Image (cartoon, rainbow, N blue to C red):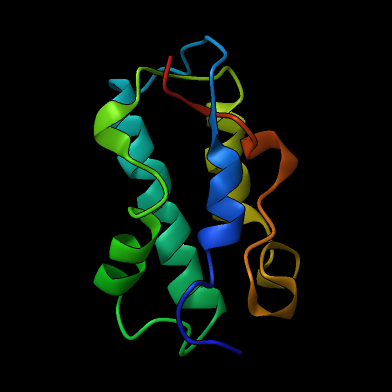
Length: 110
């Protein structure tokens, strides 16, 4: 398994241009919270995938620019819950993030 890029492909699916507000702070903070939980789970589920959580976040932030987020979709709370609770074997089959479908398009840039 390649040490970097564990979450990049899955994170590409986060962005879309639909509207909605998932609650829990502004869209920038919600986006950052999602990246944070994603990297927490990456560190937990893919030992050696990244040297540190900071490296994971830096990698993910090359794809997802939270500062530009304008809203989050209605599925955001379910996405966060799923990311936190889904078993590692389901979330990272083969050592690479398989983004849950509920998370697709939850960060909006419209």
